Every structure is written in structure tokens, then in C-alpha cells.
Amino acid sequence: MVSNKRVLTGIQPSGTLHLGNYFGTMRQSVEAQDQNECFYFIANYHAMTSCPKPEDLKQRTTQVAIDFLSCGIDPEKTVFWRQSDVPQVQELAWFLSCVCPMGLLERCHSYKDKLAHGLEATHGLFAYPALMAADILLYHADFVPVGKDQKQHLEVTRDLALAFNRRFGDILTVPDAIIQADVAVIPGLDGQKMSKSYNNTIEIFGEGKPIRSKFMKIKTDSTPVEDPKNPDTCNVFLLYRLMATPEETEELRKMYLAGGMGYGTAKQMLFEKYTDYFAAARERRADLMAHPERVEEILQEGARKARAIAEKSMEQIRAAVGL
Ligand code: ADP
Ligand code: TRP
Image (cartoon, rainbow, N blue to C red; front, side, top):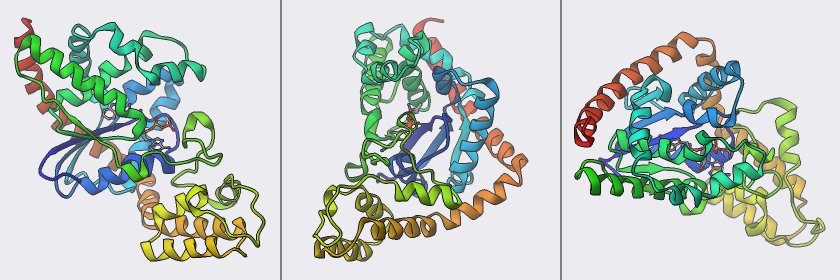
């Protein structure tokens, strides 16, 4: 991870957070806090592109804030806010739209994927990357930790920063994505990318029997119990490795290679590892759920800090474009 830089990322409040979100982005975000100036926000404007009911949008925004804080976001170290509490970002999104070639957005895979998964083809969905670019450029972020699926959106952001700077002067900081190679795509229950849209997720804060039965449903091959198994192509092993120490991982690897172990055993070990791994976060979460006013206070304080920076950036940007 980088140090002494401005690190920024957003998370959509589009549903319950899962292991793909945690290992793809959240863990890096938590680790980054000690050595960097961090800016993290709940992307509730972006969530509107999937047309949630108003009451769901509101409830999920609060829930994601609680989950993020539980996973270790420290508001003493990090500016943490709700995207819509700093509406200046919409103004910058418009400015960026005015230097954004249509072809740049037309090439975005994410838009096409979302249509293929049944989302309505709205202008908001199409222009999503311009708003995301505004999120990043408004705060002059140096680095943006994201999952691999967001790589193209970061390329769009860089292109828009360069296009804006060419036209209006050297104003916007051109950011870099941070994508950890070994956790680039976390597999879901069926082995495809874990994603809410594919209904194959394991929640970070799942509880009781339903979550255990999810672990038991992770897709594996049909190698008989007595035969040696390949850990490197097994989703159970891939997930275990994310939460276990190197020694524990090596131990399980040997069990795979030796044969005589059924996948049920590996799944049970994974389930126990998951329970331990998130135990402290689970406790923090219970505490925050009991004190929603504390969560609101944290978000308001974050928004105050973010707005001060946003307003200063916008003054310079408005002047540069001739407004
Ligand atoms: P979903 O695909 O479930 O809708 P989001 O699009 O809300 O998840 O993802 C939020 C963040 O988590 C993004 O930065 C994304 O890159 C990351 N992420 C989501 N799923 C995965 C995954 N399976 N592997 C790695 N990162 C992921
Ligand atoms: N598009 C991101 C996602 O779906 C969320 C997001 C919105 C974001 N704005 C951002 C991520 C700015 C990083 C930086 O996961």
C-alpha cells in the first residue's frame, strides 16, 4: 500500500456487503488509513442508477455506513461521508460531461453488463463514470483502491482529468487505481465473481444457520473423498486463504493434496475461520446498531470536512471554465 498520499474510494449502498466487497476493496481501505490521508464515502447518488425504492436507499445507506465503520473505518483518521451531503460533486460531473467524448462512455463494459442484467438504459446509468470521475477529481485523490471491475472507470477518470486539464489548465490531479492482484476477483458460491447481481454472495455479517448453509453450498468439483484435490482451483480454498495465516493455509493445502478429505471438511474449516475473522467487527456493529445517532454524527462531521475541500476545489474549477 502507498503512504502519505490522498486515498479515496466510494462504496455503493446497493445491498448487504459481502466478502467480495471486503477483500476486493474494504480491507485495503482500512489498512490505508494509518499511512495516508483517506477519503471514503457512501455512493448513494450512484445507487440511484439501479432505481431502489426511496426507503430502501435510505436504509441501505445507513446500513453500509455502519458496516464500513464496523470493519474498521476510523473517523478520527479518515473523512467518511455520504456522497449526497456534498452536492458540489454534481456540478463537477457536469463540467466533466462537457469534456467527455460519447465514445469513452459507450466503450464501458459495466454499462453493457448492467443492461444485460436487466437494468433500465437511463442517462444516469450511462453517465455513471462521469459522476465517479467527479467523486475522485473533486478531492484531488492520488490513489483509488477498487476491485478489478472498476479498472475501466478509473481509466475514464484519468482520461477526463487529462481532457479537462488540456482545455482549462493544469488543475485536476490524475489519479491511479490500486488493484491488488491476488484478490482481484473474489469468487462467489457458484465460482463466478461474487456479486449481489449474481445472487451468489456470502455476507460479511451473516448469522446463524442460513450463513453456514451458504458455506456448505459453495460449488466444488466431484473429486471423490479419497482422491487428492487441487487447492488452487477450489473456491473453498481460495476463500480460506484470504482469512487464514500462511501456516494455516499451508496446512489446508496439504490436506487437499493428501486426499482422504471431503469438501465438507474444508467448508466447515472455512466457516469457522470466517466466524473468527469477523468476530471483533461483529461486536462493533452490534454497538453501532444500538446507537444510530452516533453514526449520523460521524457522517455529518465527515460531510463538513469533505464540503470544505470540495468548495475550495470548485471555486478554482468554476473560475477556470469561465463561470
Ligand atoms: P456487487 O457486484 O455485489 O454489486 P459492488 O459493485 O457494489 O458489488 O462493489 C463494490 C466494490 O467491491 C467495488 O469496488 C468492487 O470492485 C468490489 N467488489 C465487488 N465484488 C467483488 C469481487 N467479487 N471481487 C473483488 N472485488 C469486488
Ligand atoms: N463505482 C463504484 C462501485 O460500484 C463506487 C464508486 C462511486 C466509487 N464513486 C467512486 C469507487 C469513486 C471509487 C471512487 O463499486
